[in-house]
Image 1 (cartoon, one colour):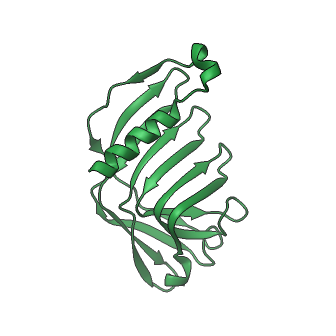
Image 2: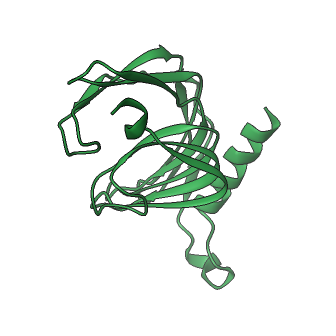
Length: 174
């Protein structure tokens, strides 16, 4: 719990920090932590070549994820915290081979009006990368450890892994 509170506090502070010289022009921020609410994950399917060489279906088999709003900036940027158990079954729909990926990490995510995001994460999260659209090769990964993930408005993903691993999942089911 201490890590969760620390992660939430650091991310909220970083999300709205302004340089000392800009203190007079810092955006107004509404803080007031909202209540926890369910944040279920929907099943999904990716065609062959999108993330793996074969078609993949993802289906939550354990989903106890919840979220709460931590802050909203004057520009509309929201800071949302996520926690809870999540296990997603990845299935190669051509062969039926599957793997259950633990995605039960704790994240604080800045969601900007232009749809870009910055994730501050501790623990495992399941992330897909398209070809030439990020700092990892095309595929699905369990990212585990301490890291940030920046997602640009165009979908490009930049991973900064401070401690941990990126486990490629396509080879586990293909």
